[in-house]
Each structure stands twice: as C-alpha cells, then as structure tokens.
Image (cartoon, rainbow, N blue to C red; front, side, top):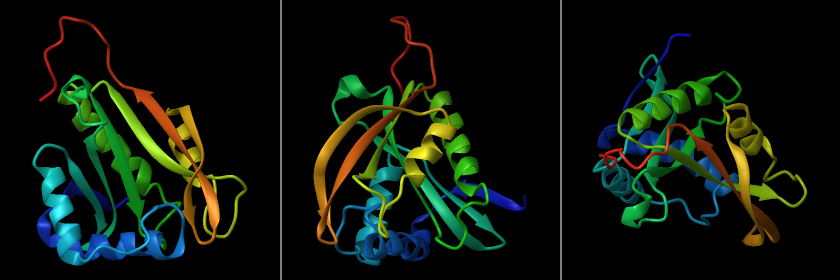
Length: 181
C-alpha cells in the first residue's frame, strides 16, 4: 500500500474538516448537528496536539483520513487511558486505511505509557441510512470489546440512537509503572 501516516499539522484543518463534514451532515456517526468552521476545527486539532497524537493517512498528497487520541474523562487518575477517534474519507473506506491509522496510533500511545484505549461509538437501535454497526465491527476486528451501552441518548435526523463504549487494553497494569507522558 502506498499510503503513508504522518503527524497532522494545523494546515491540514481544511481537508480534515472536509472529511468530517460528511459524517456530521449525512450520518449519525457524529452527534454534532453543525459542521465546525475550519477555524474551530483547527483550534480543536491544536488543542489535541498539545498532549496527544493526531495522525493523517495520505496517498500522494491527499489526506484520506485521520485519527487522534484525547483524554478519557479528563481527570488525572485516568492519565494512562485515552479515547480514540477516527474518520476516513467516505470514498476511501474499506481499503485498510483505518487499520493502519489505528495501529500506528496504538503503537505511539503504548510507547508513551498508555494502557487502556476507549472508543465512544454511535450505535443504531436498528441500522438505517444514517448509521450502521460498521464502526463497532471495525473496532472489534482491532481487538476492542464492548464494555458499556447507553440507550437512546443521541437524537439526530428525527430518531434516537444508542451509544456504546469499547475498550482495548494495550499494556500491563502494575503499581511500579511511571505515569504516562
């Protein structure tokens, strides 16, 4: 595969916001109703990149997707855990780009002392034109398992959606470990 993964830079904001806009406007994958402006998107990226990896996969010079880590819950005791997010250009799905991004992200997080990975995933009560179980199945193939479910907590496109949490343990839990970076 001739795609490569690299660290995102603020100049990627416009293209990544373009990828994300499809998921906001056309799907219930994102529970946002409005696409953030490029400036807001760039600000979100810069805030994330202060502490966590934010990766882009590209072929040639075209970004095909991105993935990033962020705080899980946001309290100090959770510093060995991260929440992950991933978005692939709608025309580039099913080609292995998501796996490459997540494997690269996981490797980098593990080297920083992260032990637990979490994904918060919109889940359909019944699959429809706005949401399938593809994200849940993708995460399961990568070793995540469902650990929580919230029923009808998201409302978009005139219908209710569930949310699930999936978890993957990537490191050994012991009390001698140093804190995550």
